[in-house]
Image (cartoon, rainbow, N blue to C red; front, side, top):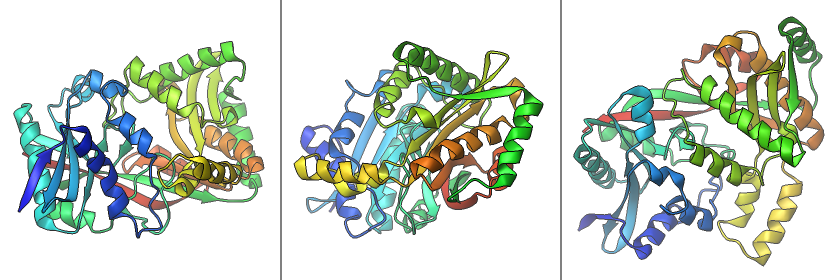
Length: 371
């Protein structure tokens, strides 16, 4: 008999975390997350998301076999920013059975309804600042760092359970071995016309901290008007910085300035999914050796976030930041670059990606469901 069980013990949490390892074991495209990082993600004492919002995890179990999982969670930051009373779900994984998927969505919906919501949105793991959206096309290549991979049948399950599209997010891919002269000329023209200068993140420890504070300031201002934007708390931002800085390359993080004032920033990360793939979720001597070898051979990167303060938008600064990501990334052997994610209605960023000869190669979809 199928049961939906709230995760309320370490034993059940382990089963929640390990389910994807069983569901994707025969999928060579999937990238296993580090198991120890997953425990931190769901630890209220280590994840600052829990400081402002509630989370409930569920498992679908039949004959003591885990068939699916889902999270139901609030997001008080979203409510403050958008004055929209909506709950959220995420971390959906499931066998190809509509009854299991329906039971999971009903459990997440019922929990969100008890919180006073009439609808829920997802998948969000846990917010737009983390992994977001259901992959609906582009299943033939592995996801880049901090992006999702899903089974193709998930879309069928979502829609059979009454979930409806709210927004699509695009991932753009650019592959090249050298910088085209056309883009070099474009960047030079933008710099001359706009009077904007672009620099990498400082490598001096004292100046680096100032730069990180500047990035937080730009991020908060630049994303203020974006659909679905959820401002990070300072604790969340500091937590993400602490997680990403060991992976980050200062040469791939840029601040754009106009007359000494911050105008925008971009952050590209080497695609550490190439490393995670060989580790298979485990940290031990053998996987660490494999990781060190894979790290030296990372050949791709993802521009994971970019923000232009409103008064500086429309001046080509986004193109300039992408240009510098290419310029510094190519000599490091980063020949494949992903720009993601881009809202389907963000015509400015879509035009910029096209101008840089990037093609949309993955689509992620956010759904809503009345509850």
